[in-house]
Structures are given as C-alpha cells and as structure tokens.
Image (tube, rainbow, N blue to C red; front, side):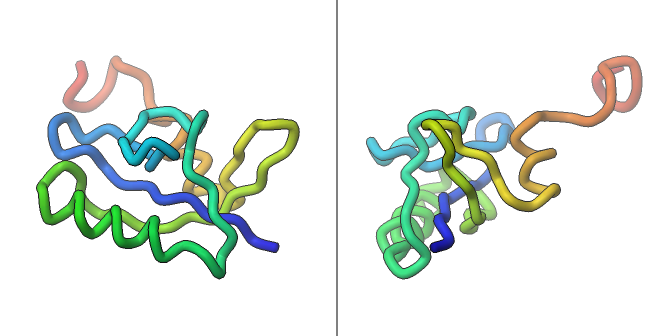
Length: 95
C-alpha cells in the first residue's frame, strides 16, 4: 500500500519542510506523519490550514517508502528536494 507524507516550502526562509506527527513542519524526514493513501485527509487539512496562516506555501502529498524506520521519497524530484541544493555555493545567488 502506498504511503504519503505532506511537504511544502517554509515561507520564512524557503526551506523544504515536512509535516510531522506533532503537527509542526520539520526540515528532516525523521518524524514525518506517514499516512496510507486512503487516510491522508488530516495531512491535507493541516497543509491547507498552514498555507492560510502563511506558514508554508505549495503544500502537497508525496509518496514515500519506509524501511527500518527510514523514510525515503519514491520520486527522484522529491529525493532531490529532500537532499538540498544540487549546486555548490560558488554559483548563483549564494556566490
């Protein structure tokens, strides 16, 4: 069965964040609120609520797999978002 978590970008600094079991947003996957595809309504509701409160933007569900307590996104795009920027600090705005 497919499992899903909720992800978004934090408005304060643009960081990728994940909805935790505690109902807060974390920059790491550890503690993410994982739900079966049929039971994600609470994740979606919290995402909409926090978007309305302007805590996060672009909240959406992603498919994940959990193995030995480690959560991994299934799609490459989400694995890249989880891992951080794919360019060094010597290019772009950071330079």
